[in-house]
Image (cartoon, rainbow, N blue to C red; front, top):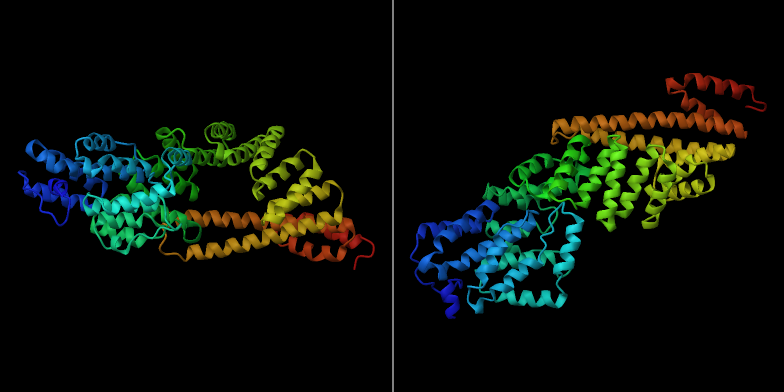
Length: 506
């Protein structure tokens, strides 16, 4: 018990008098419980100043505790490691053996933090270096329950351990943590996706808790396909302004810009993330997608080649995007080689569709037909349906081509209808950022217009091929539908003349 008394860590023990500024010590303790990054830095600064001379044996443990929390926070925010963990290691050698201080340092080392937007390379490297076995985790939980650290620090470590290594597969922090200090309420909230209210409550209690904006933005981006990005851009801007050295926050900012199709700004963010962490595979993939959409195909090919070198698990994505860009440059042999390599990793609908496009353009119709048919069976891909019709056209299978173009027509019609519904819902959203809503609405309207145009062209193509195959009855209503597009008026007139002149036409 002497150790506990000497360290001043047991709630039931009365610590020895500290010959230091009591107001400053109380302020440091309060800052620690407020828990924000800047709060922890302020608390440690005061603890360091107070832990001098005769006070060092009593207060050094508090510097140690602040260092542990700061080291974990740096991991949670994907910040470069400061001197926190190094100082904790040095201090551990001075603390009483009964505290087992080195074990706390090892525990912090074993917790990755798993920040949103982290490089998968980092995740794998951390898991390989610090993975804990189930027995080790169970033993650590038992050990923490009798920890000599102050309860808030002990509970924070336990929450971090449970979040990194869930016991049952889903993390449910104790209810007590939610209503406790901002320090613990924050750590409980970031373990779960969807707790915007909990994170907002932490921010309300401690306005300096800027890191909550980062995690709120991640939640908003996760639901953006249904609800739009909300205020994710504003939240990320705030987080990035405070933590510019975080590759994960920088990457997530780029992911937001990519979502709203601001490709130049997204590219700038991804390049910045890569400057901070050259092996950030997710940022490099984002860069490839931006370059592709900006028509910088040679740069995209170079970036995809780099991704192949730095991340084995990204091979499928790297080969797929490199194939797309080779195809855009009409380098079909290179494109086909890469799409074959992508298919060897995972034969997804997108990969099979692109394989079919390339094979068709190389006039290799048997594999093109097989791949396009397989892709259509896996997903509602209108372009794959169009290309399958082109395959039948090349083979002069007029009825099969007509039916395939008709299938593509229905696909474009349905997709345009679905997009129109999304546009209507978007325009009714008063809670969205006006600039985003305007840009998103323009993008959706552009998609609708393109699909309607392609729908009418597919109607004309279907009718033309059905006439060539002798199915005049099926062709007539398709001609009428194609006539709704004024741009096709001359071709519709010619096809109607052909229909009327065809023997046995009804």
